[in-house]
Amino acid sequence: MSMEIKQHLKLSQQLVMTPQLQQAIKLLQLSRVELVDVVREELLENPVLEDSVEIAAEQQKPAPSSSEATSAGAPEVDAERVGETEILVARASEDKIDTTTEVKPDARSGDAVADFDWDTYLESQSNAPPMPTYRPNTEDLPSLEATLTRGTSLFDHLEWQLKLSRDFAADEEGVALLIIGNLTPDGYLDAPLDEIAEEAGVGVEHAEEILRRVQEFDPPGVAARNLQECLLIQARYIGADDDVLVGMITRHLGNLEKKNYAVIAKDLNQPLDEIYEAAKVVMGLDPKPGSAYTDEEPTYITPDVYIQKVGEKYFVVANDDGLPKLKISDFYRIALSKGPKAREYIQERLRSAQWLIRSIQQRQRTIVRVTESILKFQRDFFEKGAAFLKPLILRDVAEDIGMHESTVSRVTTNKYVHTPQGIFELKYFFNSGITRSDGDDLASEAVKLKIKQIIESEDVKRPHSDQRIVELLGSQNIEIARRTVAKYREQLRILSSSKRRQVF
Image (cartoon, rainbow, N blue to C red; front, side):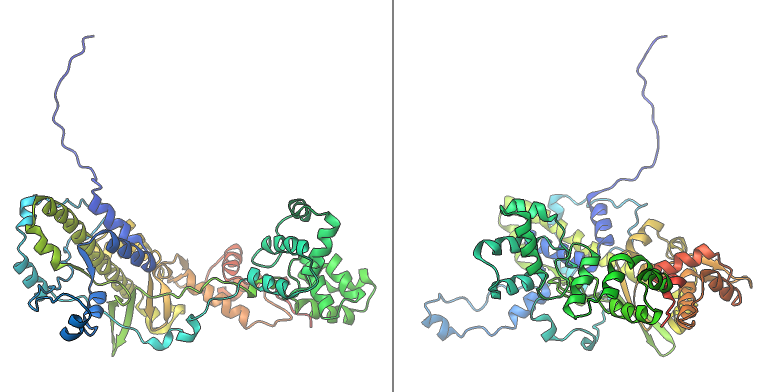
């Protein structure tokens, strides 16, 4: 068989991931905090970009008078200096950013960018309708006093007590610091004591004595090696370490969790009333003593979009408050004529800045469009509450707004919306459906709400089992399996009926 080389012409389609498309996809899936970090980083790297809010704040500062400048030895500056023309963000393309479409790179040559028609650009930008913005009421935000200081960590709190204590010698303080440094955020010792003793160069018995003294620090129960030791330390601290309580903690924590008080009473040979009283004391102890001390600052959710009701209509507006207002510096437009090297550098940075601005604008528009579609599908939720949430999938919204399903998934990830019913993640509105006997479908979140309401209204001494909850939901025309009820109950962090039962 002979081999030969032939030429063939073939026509096919393929997805080309241009750098601009990759940037648009990356910005689309970022959260609000991550977007601000990316923009701040780009402001540092790209000199063509400026934050108009910061520029306006600097321009509002009072300038020194000419006499003050002369007396200070500063050179006189011509009053007719070049002003900075605020070039606002470029008009975003009306083409939708989609992972299934190709975004072609800028085909303009270097000469075309150099001959950029700034007058037409500014005129068209000034006539373009601005993006709607909404500034929320600051009464919902934490007070200024609540943000001035950082929290005290568990390590700092224990180290402070160690420095004030006179029960430790100089060499013992190093061992105590090793113990404090090996505590978990909940306050438990995370390393074997023999390893700590070996690292500190002391005996295990000596390290045990130092650990016992550290366990006397506040909060009670800190530096314990397990739950039993933690509860025993707290029982000694409050003076309730009698034989009944100690026996319950050391031998019957499992029965205490299952509330098998009769088994505990029989093993400890105590009346049931005494077991009840000891159980009340144990339930008042803290199994995580170190959780009250943390230096982590709370993260406040800032909504990306607002849904406001005016009269009988709902309006969706993007929340641009807190985001940098990007503009292109007029200084570098003038610098285009200062030589070929400067022109080449500025042209490259100018293209990068324009694509970033367009991608951010398109991101905001896409979030608004997706939220408007969600509003159309879930209008009953905004009117009446979570009990009227309907089943919804990403494909429904994607087909409604003419985008790809993956694009909708990126838009709804880590994005939050402020509604009359509260603040929710956009993913919250997408639920699987539970079939009702009357033919209508009910969203899974609505079913979880009904399960929660049933459990809240139950008799605490005779709580409903999962099968009983299935029967109660069936009386409301909701057909659901027992294992599904158990799954939803666990997602709601609700204990089983045996652990919810209150005996006293």
